[in-house]
Length: 150
Image 1: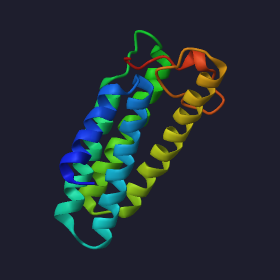
Image 2: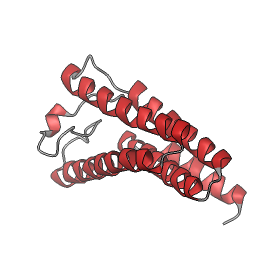
Image 3: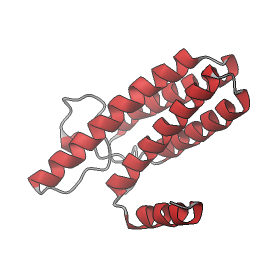
Image 4: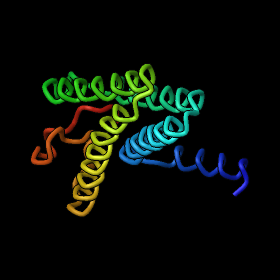
């Protein structure tokens, strides 16, 4: 696929995505950039690792900014803490050139992404309106998950 076609595909995917799909895209982007940063660090390509970590940090910042504490204050407080932890592990990885810090952030991002995917899938098969956020814990109920802008 040419770069222009790829850009157009991504643009269309974003414009036609549901809020739930957009949230998954944010996770996918943060995970992809963090993995690219880790690989660049392993290769001692510090410029690339810095760029990729900054991109992942921006995505995490956007996810945090999308929380709506007026809807579910306690859940949003937990998610804010989780996003802060991920963000600062990525910052630390950048400052210390520490792949282990990226791996810690990725472990949480992968878990949260999969939890969100399963929740969206479950709500679609049940015919219920799709929730706007992931549960902090896998046993959380869907009605406890509404804290993202949609």
